[in-house]
Amino acid sequence: MSAVLGNGLRQERERMGLTQAELAERVGVSRKTVNTIENRVFMPSTLLALKFARTVGKPVEELFWIEEA
Amino acid sequence: MTENDIERADRLTRRRARIAMVLGIVFIATQGFHIADDQMTRTVDIVRVIAWGVWVIVFFLFLLYGGGWLRGKSIRALMNDEVTEANRRGALVAGFWATMLTAFLCYALSFYEPMLVRETLHVVITVGVGAAILRFAALERRAIGA
Figure: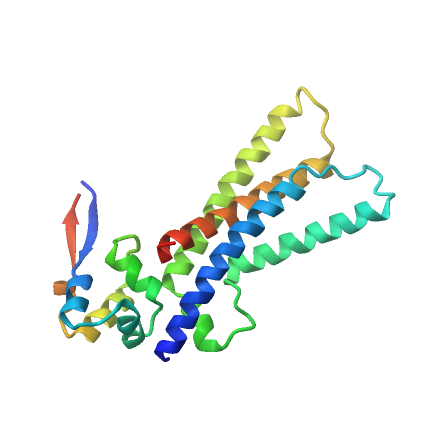
């Protein structure tokens, strides 16, 4: 059984009223990174996941989770 | 790092993806079918081979390091972030498979048609590097939502 990394980044970003570019600036990454994570095209490293979690003020396991495919 | 940096990196990343796609197509179209003079006696052939070698080296360095050498440190970091690093790795894997497949086809073809080593290597390297550049462009375009 394969698993994929789910995330609630788009919901958290919209809750904070931020655009992808604004969230990217706060985390210190490109807008492309935000876009690909939100669309589940790219699986971020642990370091990057922790940076996103810290920026949105949530524990990393609430922002990212395992989804059984 | 400012929002201006983010927007600038975004714009440059889009431009890089477009340029990589165009250069990859032009590279394969112009070099892939180039058959060098066996003796390399004509100046035009020597110049053409040198130009091809420069293209290959530039593409290879670009795939390994991501380019953006003339940009500032923060812009370069944004342009070569985790996503682009993953795309570069994916492109190198695609280039490896294209190289292997082309080499295998040339090997099989050599049983029916005599092939010069130089010609064969020219085709194998061109297809391998060209495929890697095109794959990188496609992955980057998908990442930026182009």
